[in-house]
Every structure is written in C-alpha cells, then in structure tokens.
Image 1 (cartoon, rainbow, N blue to C red):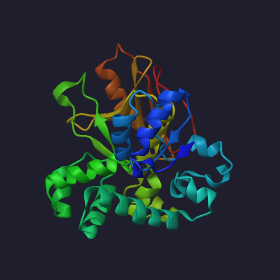
Image 2: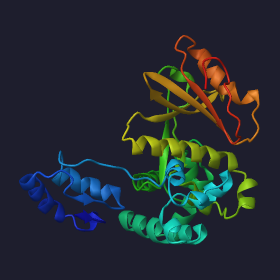
Image 3: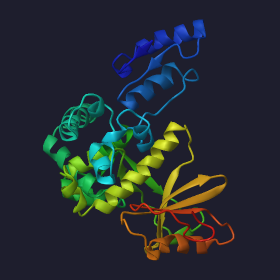
Length: 309
C-alpha cells in the first residue's frame, strides 16, 4: 500500500504500526509526503525502528541521462534551465510555468502555513534575497536588515526552507586548520532552476550573462554530489574550506579514509590558476596526499598534478 502526503493523516501511523508488528512483512507500506518535518515527528513517535528512510531530492543529472527524457538535457545551460523536478518532464509543462506555480503553491502556501507567516511580500523579498546570496557565507544580520525583520525571524525562515528541502547549508571544514578557517556556513538550493526562477533567469541569454553564473554552476555541482550521497544513503557529510586569506576549497567530502577536495570553476577553458586553491590546501598537509579534483565547464579531462584527478 502506498500512502502519499501521510502528514495530513498522522493517526494512520498508529494503525500502520499495529499492522506492521502483527504481519511482519517488509515493505508492506510505502509512506511519502512533501513536509519532511511533519512526517519525521510522526514517524519518530509511532514507527521508530520499523522504517527505512529515503530522501528523494530532485532528479540527478545521471538519472535524467538514464531516462526517456535525456534528449531534453542537452548542453549545460539548457540543463540548468530545464530543472530537475520530474513533473514538467512527464506533463510537458514549460519550466517557467512549473516553477512559477511551484513557488506559489508549495513555498508560499505550505511554508506560510507551517510558520504562520503573515506578510507575504516580506517573505517573497526574503526568498529573492536568499537566492541572491547563493554560494555566499550566511549572514543573518544582513538578511534581517534587508528584509526588515529580526535576526531570529531570519533564522526561523531559513530553518523552514532547509527542513523542507528548498535550500541547504554547506558547513565549513575546520578540524585540522584551527583559527585560520572560516566557520560560517554557505547557502545553496537543492534545485538550480528554482534558484534561477527567483533570480528572474528564464532564458539561456539571461543565464549566460548573469552576475551569479559562477555561483549557479557551483550550486549545480554541489547539489549533484548531494543527490549521489542521498541516493546511495551515505552520510559522509559535505563541507567547504576557506581561511582568513581567501584560500579556499569549494567542496570537501570523506571517502576511503581521505578528504576529497573539489574546486569548481564555471569557465569553459582550463588554465593552471584554477588549481591554486587545491595546491594550497594540499601543501597544508602534504604527507596525507588527499585526492583532488577540478570540475569546470569545459570538456577536456586531464590530470592536474601527480596526486590529483
């Protein structure tokens, strides 16, 4: 039995618990819902120890290339503007129409209901300001001043967007580098097309010349790694690193006992300066020989140094 939007009927979970305990049939129920916070609270009360949890993020690039709709994802900018929610693909809805309606129905209505947000125009301004800060260190005070609300309100609104899988924060990695490291998180969107919609980007021309293009590309790559980890049900954690002198690594994750560093550049042409951050990071602990990768918008693959990919 498949039950969707189960958070609307929390009493059902008590009956499911009884049935699961009596029948002991694995996979007897599949329960889904779009409000993760409501579902998690109900499951923790009724079905603890009886469930396997799967986080279904928007489609990954790999999933789109293995689908019947792969021809719709040709070219980097077209892929970004297509978006990764399945419904506009299946129903032949234009991405612009879908994300306008998605923003109106899910983000505005559902999120407002959860937090009882009274001033819709203020919340809309908040969403657009969040989009304008993608890939940047989160500054609650700056957001509060620009929106015209309190610091605590910004914390609350960001928490709701994060819990509902609209945005996520990438935490800084500083275990081995102490006080030299920045310790504020960065902010990204799970779906780059929603980000583009909030930035009023609706065409390849808009996207190519946009001031935030490099941050949008960075968001795309980091979100893809997020999706891979979630689909494999891994909990290894994703981080970035930056010190007080602007040396940085865009993405760090643990793999095979080593820290894999990824630098992300939106340029389509490779040049050796792109590896500056990777080389600096590697020199901090040269004996560890952590694997490193440069991801850029070009098509040429080549080793960037002996210990790198």
